[in-house]
Image 1 (cartoon, rainbow, N blue to C red):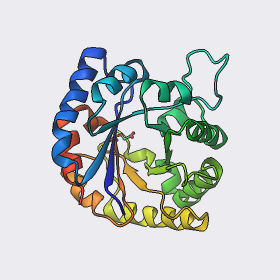
Image 2 (image 1 turned 120 degrees about the horizontal axis):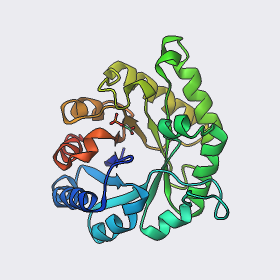
Image 3 (image 1 turned 60 degrees about the vertical axis):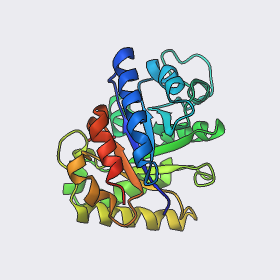
Length: 246
Ligand code: PGA
């Protein structure tokens, strides 16, 4: 496996001054962790271009949090993959569980978004993961398998696609999946990717990753990095997670 990818998902947080300060603080510390981790920050769309300009020439990459499945046109309030690319993004998160829930995004829509990202040479970070009810019903694997088959497009590996396994019950709850649960699902996802001849697609874990648990999680087999929400809003915590990469 290559270097770990530590991706910060700022979600709907960050006014201009605060976003710039956070990004600059991440950039400042990124040099020290450069040999063990690649660092990506995904700020809100309103500040993405500004943050990307501030990160230019440094080790910190910038990504979007979502893109539309269409290339352009009459979609009020939406943001296209090409716009993100134009603003300086290299990656885009698609299919985050909050978007699947808040905006009714289906697997088919997520696949469309991933395709559009790939068209504009953005690396999609495609999120999958079961809810607590699904896990308790013993359906976690089935749900993940369904999401993978119906939202990951062909050509995903060649386009630098990345999968993020984020059990919905572990996002923003402070409740991290156990090391066994993470290792078990990552190995299952790896086998599903293998059966589609996408064996080298990195698999990130996301869900309440913090400095205190990062070392153990990032050392697990098939964990290629982390998608970090809450802890990515504090530069020192985010950098400590990156420093914990093996
Ligand atoms: P969290 O969010 O780290 O706050 O749990 C992770 C995510 O939603 O990507």
